[in-house]
Length: 89
Image (cartoon, rainbow, N blue to C red; front, side):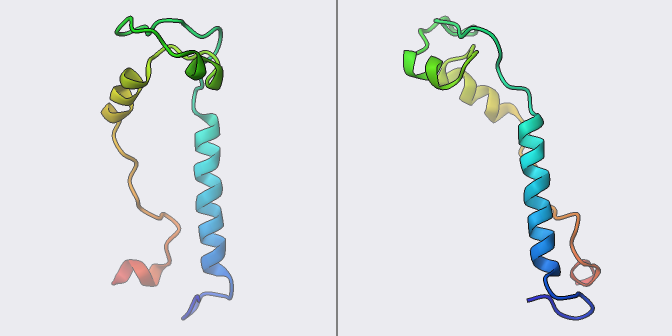
């Protein structure tokens, strides 16, 4: 698939490296710890038992967690390992 000056398999290596970087970033992200709360820390609504079992240390209900996640800026989709030729176009 790679052409020009790139060696065979260069594109696959770039994709694998990008995936590995993203997986490492997700694993390094802080996860809830401790005992799960029975009621949401923000809105005081009950947290379903299934959610508490699925996510140990959960502190927020689904709605508050979704609101918090929506406030975070989406990650840019720039491939920093792109070839020089693709950046010149």
